[in-house]
Amino acid sequence: MSVKKYIQDNQEKFLNELIDLLKIPSVSADPKFKDDVFAAAEFVRVSLEKAGADQVELCQTAGYPIVYGEKIINPELPTVLVYGHYDVQPADPYELWDSPPFEPVIKKTERHPEGAIFARGSADDKGQFYMHVKAFEAMMSNNELPCNIKFMIEGEEEVGSEHLDIFVKENKEKLKADVVLVSDTHMISLENPSVTVGLRGLAYMQVEVTGPNRDLHSGTYGGAVANPINILCKMIASLQDENNHITIPGFYDKVETYADDYRKALNDAPFDLEAYKKELDINDVHGEAGYSTIERVGIRPTLDVNGIWGGYTGEGAKTVLPSKAYAKISMRLVPNQDHKEISKLFEEHFKAIAPASVKVKVTPHHGGQAAVVSTETPGYRAADLAIQEAFGKKAIPTREGGSIPICSLFQKELGLDPILLGFGLDTDALHSPNEHYGVKNYYMGIETIALFFKYFKDEASK
Ligand code: BES
Ligand code: ZN
Image 1 (cartoon, rainbow, N blue to C red):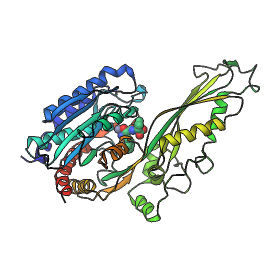
Image 2: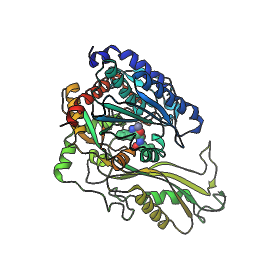
Image 3: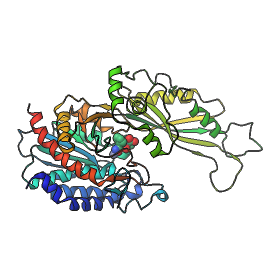
Image 4: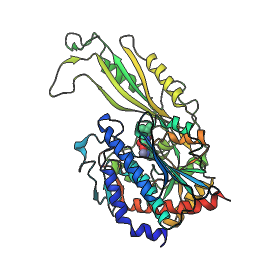
């Protein structure tokens, strides 16, 4: 039986297994789900063992474990290191989901006429890393694994992969490979398959603005004492100018500018602005002057408030001049912008623009560097060939706006360019209510991944 036939014959089984995995609420950000995160790790461990991996283990870290497993068929052959994450984003706000986030259901959508699995983590990243486990199972069952394989599936990606750094640095020999293969990104569509060749970095800050030492009567004191929420809003508004350029001094110093032909190639990728606006129910897009939507997301840095709070937000009206205001602010970064340096620039600037009437505290959260991947490598060529065979079309290289901080870690510590072979769509509602993943994308992904191994063996030995 061929690998392709095995995958086709086992579609239902593969889908049911994924559904079982999606039922585990492995939210890494919330300690309430600690046992579930461990349970998801255990699920991955068992599934790797069942699929035929050796040396399967839960590698303990100071946080959640990294699931490792391998199959070394011949040390002379090339080795593929598969990375993914079994943790998921919090599902809040639950009331905005049409069905409970950890009770997967399959429904048809406009972009998934053949059905999509609705559940938190379906596209990010359980549905995607699990394709690798199933592709591996299919190759093993047919005695057709062309290369060695190593799996490293972590449980802290959604909270910044804090403990992965040390693990990678301390286990270079164990993780030694010829390529890293990651499915945790998007493709343009099944009709226009693509491979991601760039991801943005991230610097995530929390700010606290304090006015008076206690909440005050907004009549007695309003107008005479600084309201930290008013001040915070003004400070945030000043971080971008009328062209939506970021005003933090030095912010753009290391930002690369691209030649016209590179920008043209990016903009030549299929992109329907009207459909984009319609899907989001917006009348217009918004962003830095002089750049297209594709460029704003792919090659330009940005700054966004992710949350802002303070004062009275309960029922009715309470007249209060609050003592404190808070915001969580993220900056998406591009290659050469160091997230630690940018965090420092942000902190200095944010303190400098604060009026004397308030005190400001700035706390950096997690961060990570951007990554750009060459298209001139055996790994990229293998991905392109696999896509050509599975989809009948060449892969379009794209740059995406999300971040996977470990990609730059792999480049730096292991000297490996990650191949970002993702099968989600940008409309799959990652991190949002009603996250979903196309059933067809899941099956096509499994087939394409198996083909990647076949082509990588040839490409790596050229
Ligand atoms: N899968 C995403 C990254 C992603 C999303 C890549 C969309 C390409 C397109 C990943 O799990 C993620 O969400 N990463 C976080 C960063 C992390 C440090 C919390 C992100 O991008 O916000
Ligand atoms: Zn992810």
